Length: 464
Image 1: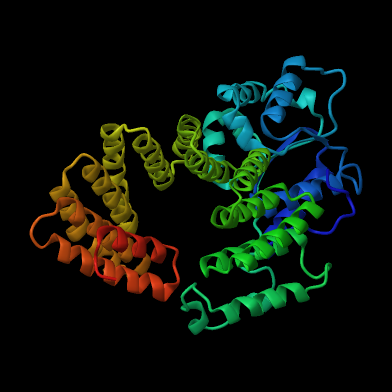
Image 2 (image 1 turned 45 degrees about the vertical axis):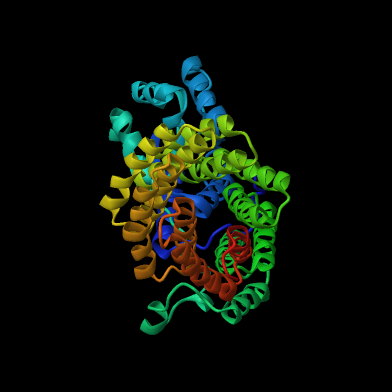
């Protein structure tokens, strides 16, 4: 529980501050049962719960009973409804995790709430506040239409988008149109600005989110030490204010860095901790992403059966969220584990299932990556001509058009391997040319693939 006197976790938009004022006035006026739905996620959700705890039992707001979060909270609500103690009604109550109601126990708790609409006033003599992410509210409303009919209000609360303070605002069309990739000097300058903030200038939750965004930018720029330092600072801030989801975000970023640097045990541990925290914070989209990352990690560590279970759980969450792209990515990860186990036909079927999703989304890069992996399956089955045709005519042109140098050099390397395996007239020369081009780009970008390409050239007896 966050102490009542603690400073804000997030900087909220002016509209959100107005909505919270409306909510507080409503809580004060609630002389009988009144149902409020609050739409909030991430740091904004943590800030809403902090304020509700601070208001509880003071300034005219009745004492609020806070149910737990996650599956335990859903079970607690179910027990409360089952007992139906009308002799000791609650003064007020908060259900902090509406998503868990939807996802726990086959939605039986939501059905019970819906059926209890007419008796809730006997069990709670004042306000009932339910907090849920905006993208799941329609789902909950459809499952409990009678309950939603008696809402006193639905209020959306959001944190200020982007950076946490005006210092970081984009103030011209030129800066708004600037590509997201930033130079090392720009990233270091932003880090210095973040460090300059006094503890009471920016809410800790917003500051933690800013460090996480900066950490991802450092990671994209291959500044792994800076990325990890940013993640550690974000975690320190988030832990200090009980911002569970923010701690999970920081650990997920740390895991990305450790994936590159090792050790493998620390990588898996960070991912498991991030997953547990995002589950606790009722963040289904982040939970699904964590399940995918953990699935890939345990597959890499030699446990493909466990990986497949994690990835299928992620697919179930993505289907509930209606996230076609996430589901397609998880399917691709399952195909990787099937290939590892030698189940090439099933892996090929799954990759072909994902292709239309990327085509429908207009995601040319993900389509090219999937086709490249299909080419790998064809290669493993000895269909070298078909594999080479895909790489040369469907994959390489996409990376060239997108200016994706790393994707291009990986594709060229794969093409060289197929040429070398096929051994037809001209294949040796083609393989040498492709590896020379890929090697130049890898050396220029200082990528780890450079060493692999040098080794391939040596092993194949191609000219250095």
